[in-house]
Image 1 (tube, rainbow, N blue to C red):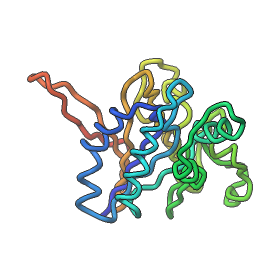
Image 2: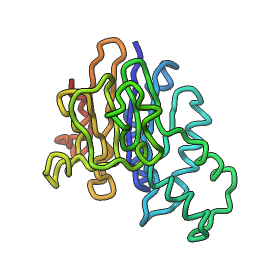
Image 3: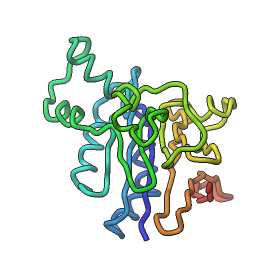
Length: 222
């Protein structure tokens, strides 16, 4: 049995990321080397270009080399474009080269993890049909049946369900999961968890207890 965790669209909220990682994911990665964490992009935000979050993710990747996968998001893509255009400056060449090396997607036998989406009209040939901007910036979102489950961020789940107070994982009851919880506003990072044995998807809710402390409650999505 192994677990795959997915989070996306952190948008510079480093302390929230640390809380989620330390509370829900770190022990799992330590206990079983088969467990993985996949980060789907948008670690930076236009209004928050603090590169500390990149250093943190790079250190995590180096510590859990085969367990953590860091994907490219449109904000990282724009960050590189702005550096090239001279609009912003970043002197850490190692970090820049690391961002450039980030893959656009991660695929399993039954899933595609990606920041924004793929060209689903290309069907089984989606790798050849999807241009780079599809992976990072596809809009609007797609729902319905596909050959594999597609796990993406990029589009606020509140926009998908048309409820400004909805920040949890969205599942379309078929093959699409969206996990952008508008973290820069909600101060909450949704976590999608997949059990490779039971094929179940779950997520977590942060619950206030009677002693005024918070605990995490896991609930089944599919």
